[in-house]
Amino acid sequence: MSESVTITRLGARGDGLTADGLAVAGALPGERIMIEREGGRGRLLAIETPSPDRINPFCPYYEACGGCAVQHLAPDPYAAWKRGIVDQALAQAHIETPLLPLVEAHGAGRRRITLHVRRIEDTARAGLMAARSHALVPIEHCPITVPALHRAPQVAEALAEYLGRGSKPLDVQATATESGLDVDVRGHGPVSDKARAALTRLAGELDLARLALHGDIVVERRPPTLASGEARLMPSPGGFLQATQAGEAALTALVLGAMDKRVKRVADLFAGCGPFSLALARSADVLAVEGDEAALRSLDRAARATTGLRTLTTERRDLFRRPLLPLELDRFDAVVFDPPRAGAQAQARWIAESKVPLVVGISCDPGTFARDAATLIAGGYRLEQVTPVDQFRYSGHVELVGVFRREATPKRRRLR
Ligand SMILES: C[S@@+](CC[C@H](N)C(=O)[O-])C[C@H]1O[C@@H](n2cnc3c(N)ncnc32)[C@H](O)[C@@H]1O
Image (cartoon, rainbow, N blue to C red; front, top):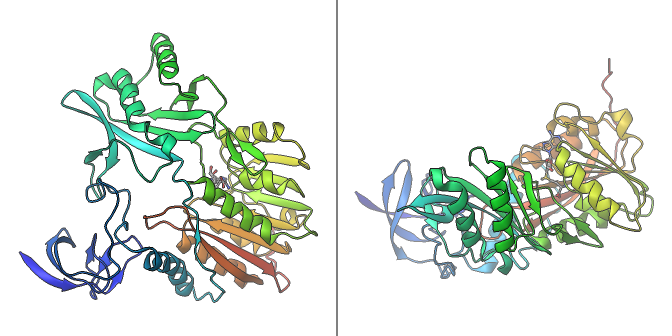
């Protein structure tokens, strides 16, 4: 049964919300709309009074695909909404700090896409998932990716035609590197030596830089490099990578901008393949700590290929289980931490007890960042400022950088 409702605000995931919290995808604040209730949500049937902020989405798959949530919102209210997500998370944790304007960091587009491949009428079709569903939306290309990734669906389909004959659904991750596409395929069964040889030939026909299966390299025809300041990253197959080059550059600039001449020793925690470590090592000795061995190998490889760096040491360590302790932290002039979405709860507790004068937190989850920031503030740090960075344009995801300086002497727990 249809009904008419009014949307009062835009939720953090990009849904329009009514005053009593009913979520309606595709609706904007101020709009009077017709909906049908479906599984606890509202399905938009018609817009009776459109918002003046409504614009036409440019992507032909927008209505069906679950990748983007807010292509229908004009740029200024869009930027206010994104910044507001961070503002709200900080307010919920009772943190008062200057929140700077949103830094636009979409640049030329996303440099990585993960496509799902299914057999439809005995043909491999690559696409993205519909919102809140396992239904595939086949695509020709995704317009929010860099142009070099526009052929990724055809590449994924060609690989799946070879690998997916057994009708297993595949996930194909393609990264646009300076030397061509770096592709990692997941979801298939065991692959024989003969099949690997055939895949090597196929990688040549498709002119891929590198092809891997579940992170295991089948062939590296050219090293897949990515310019990162004066260095070149060489991420491991499927290993973490910032979503856009502009995003990585913006985050790195904010990290470097927080440093000063006194910073001679830095710990880069959750270092990944090393964009911050490599930039920081131009003026300071850096310890890069990371849990993923392949990411650290990539970092070492990139560091060896970069000239003009001071000492850059790597350590593999699970920072959730074995965070750096105050005595280890105290020898650094600055600590940078960039954890996964879960945040750095255990590590933040020990930083809060350290003497480190400067701490820079990077996060893709404002909620866990605010939780960890509250821990640092309780330990005597001042959150000097937070800068939201938009490298996930059109989605509810937002990146941020927070700069903390120690104000009060740490209170230390007694370590046994
Ligand atoms: C958001 S990424 C940041 C990587 C890097 N700073 C960058 O900008 O590319 C988070 C990193 O934390 C690593 N990680 C996740 N859990 C971890 C843990 N428990 N201990 C150490 N590192 C972890 C991941 O492998 C990933 O490289």
